[in-house]
Length: 626
Image (cartoon, rainbow, N blue to C red; front, side):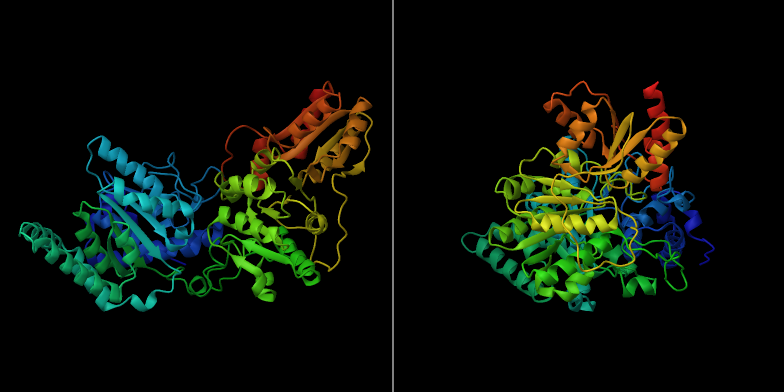
């Protein structure tokens, strides 16, 4: 896909957009789309969302002054146009690459990234905090929160909306509806009404008439109320904004989010309003690229693809861990009608598409609401069902209270399938699953498992569903050794590790992908005359204390290896276990993610940075052994 960049090349900062004429904005929008498609087709990334907000982004930057005003983007999936228009055009080809620009807003990356975001539903809260800070110091800049309708399924956004109109005035919420079934309301009349209601003349006239009428004895307040009811009745017939009006916002919309002229007119009118405002725009995900328009979910987080066909650049012969999880759950659900699958707006990502198709009445997508998903599961489990909640590790952080209070305290048999555990690559620090062991391991009643292969994932899922209490199965992003999943799996005895090879000098205790790293490191060490065995821990809680104590009791060195932060992870668990066994003086060396946030880039490169390659591990063990 070629573009001459006639207009985009003239944009070095947001203010440069104002130098263009209104007639030059549509071709600029086309160039922005072409550049996004070109780079994402090579690098992968969040395509559909970013394509859907190109005109909205241009209109916001055409009307507002980003040297002064502040725009907070929700999630960050839709910020590729923002990056191209804020001085990062030449760097955009490095999107999501090691040392390149992030796929999400990042405060340290640009002065126009006013707030970092990687998780949904945060924009209104953050923007509201900025607005209050502005008011405290006497500023007058406009603070704008820009979020998609999916973010409203997150409680944080609703909590912020509830408070917003009470504590900030010069505050704008732009609600980008790209999935809600409100398209019949989008048309000429609603947009015309929004233009009229947002116009400064109407706004001032409405305010002045209200002030005059209120001074009329006895009748004034009644006339104001009657007029207000009439306006609201007319608006209510054609707009879905009553709930926002009740929360204290001036509501405008729905507006066609791809109509630059209307967007600029209405935003220009809203700019002078010093009250809380909610502008409702309607966009189409994937706009401008037919494959993404037809299947926006597939192109939400796209792998590199061929632009002409939309097909992936690489064909995967083997199943991913998410696919193995989903197929295994289908097989288990055929045998047990009590098994329920729950996802928090990640049906495709967690591999549950097939389950949803086969068992539609046993599948629940609760939206971006991880906390609710877990308590919802707890309620089911309390009445005899066997719910399995599939949630990415990074998003599970949002449901910690529910894990502790609603599931584990009551010892309910909820299975939590923790997808994307460990380093996830190009999505970076907001998405690495580096903390879940640490915040889960200290919760009583909870069993934590991690497979080293696809076959073991199926077996551990069967183990979890046969257990009478809460359990976690964590697994990484990536492909397995399987091309298909069979219908039968044998549960693994809880708390039993797998000794893969014995060692005279020491033994590696590893989980997940790090088991393969341990095996390679062991081979390197044997070439140097050091005999280290390998144990596939499988169970992080409870550990196989008998095997661990037996190895350490023979004076062997213990090396732990995990793709997780060192603080509170597998290595900490091993250390604590040995101390309880009276073996606190055993020689232990721990490998894991250091105490800092890991950036974005290919997983292999990130492992090198963290010292988690076979060569790095073997080299450090050699030094340790003297």
